[in-house]
Image 1: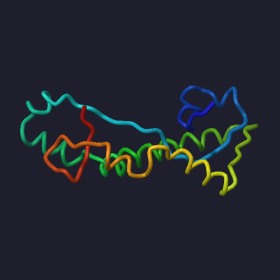
Image 2 (image 1 turned 180 degrees about the vertical axis):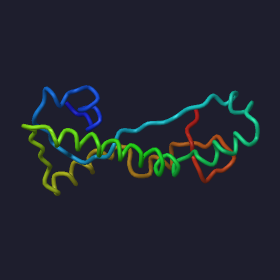
Image 3 (image 1 turned 60 degrees about the horizontal axis):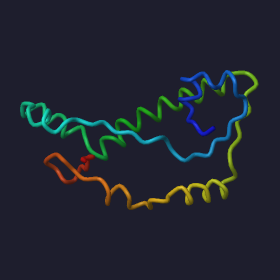
Image 4 (image 1 turned 60 degrees about the vertical axis):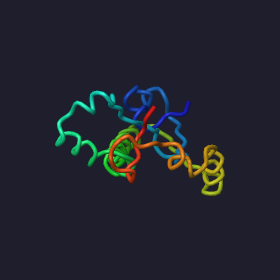
Length: 127
């Protein structure tokens, strides 16, 4: 089964598993959506606040950093339980696996994410 540290704790899988392989491919993706019509009805100051705290950089820096902390705490919980064996891949194998997982290529975000709001420097998802 492939699942992150959060799932091991949240679904209590660490209670029934005792061997884990850390392959370091990063965390899962996620996104937050808002209906464009609802956005258009917001007052200017609300739109400005959403625009200021949205887009790729905001997602990476705020949301991503929060997830990193949550995952680190979940990993600490699992590592603190008795009888857990946690292994890692050798660096060369990890590099090969990471490269083979980039099927969309490193340019994917810049080519496939369109921006809705006023600033083209902060892409966000659209239909």
